[in-house]
Length: 291
Image (cartoon, rainbow, N blue to C red):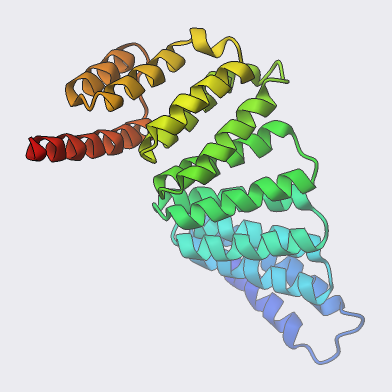
């Protein structure tokens, strides 16, 4: 460890000296400094001195920017971000955002999308759902501009739908799930996920408190995918709608338990169903008060 730190310090000093040299010809000092800062950062990485390594990668990036070498500058910011991820999520996000901006400017949209998605994942870990949603949305747009694989675009859009529902932006989530279901029907690779997308869309409509809309949607979904009416997902939604129309909390709970016993519900679906159940309880209590 000590050897790596000593080497890193020596290389960093040489890099600073290059920057402060009096006679810089044709930017060669910036080029030499960029390489020295990079080597210094690598030494500090080996010493697991993450913050120091990150700061030196940033210095390397700034030297590359002076040379208008934007591709290397963006990659240096990514290297810095991956060091800061060990110690500082805000630091990592800041560097990745700079990299995304540069990659976008030079037309490397898929690279920009990749790191925008990584920013979204960092925000998701920190439970900052609004910012996570924004960055996955940006990633989806950049993947589309870059003409990347359809699956990458869909993965990001599904995240946007997930977060939108968590933020109770149900209409946005519903549209995304229905659009992806429609799009997936034309793909042999993706068509097996259609029933799941339609289920998620239906759960969002129930959470929105509109059982009439979901009844109409179930009819549309049968037209969209004639096989859907034969699935457990369709029956689950239909039974949930029936229990809500009957204002029967016990029946609602039983329907959920039966489905969960065969197809375990993830935390996202469980949260939406709990919201629906709580609303149903309130409605049931109001009816009791009237009688």
